[in-house]
Length: 135
Image (cartoon, rainbow, N blue to C red; front, side):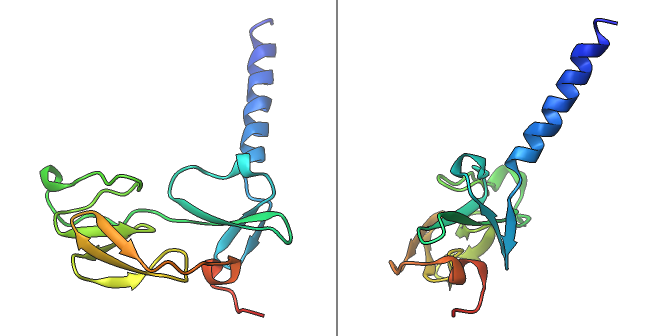
């Protein structure tokens, strides 16, 4: 009997934990969080809207790589691995010399060498990040 009680308590604590980390709402392509501590730490880019004190976050999954496993490289500052002569931004792979829209929805990212991305330095907001119409 003593074993069943801790197991039930542990089960309910686990359910509560998963409830806490979920986003409070959706805004177009983004999850919205009111508590910064609840934001996922991997494969997520966020902006903080100081007017409503909420965090608008876009998460992604890494694209499948087409190079052999022994050529796949982890990339600093990104959870996605890459192949030689490629880069990644927001889970999207692109080739050296290629320029794509950055995950923030505002800037342009260019792959200048294996794993090295440079971008324009324009600010972003929840509308551009989340793919929402700008009012």
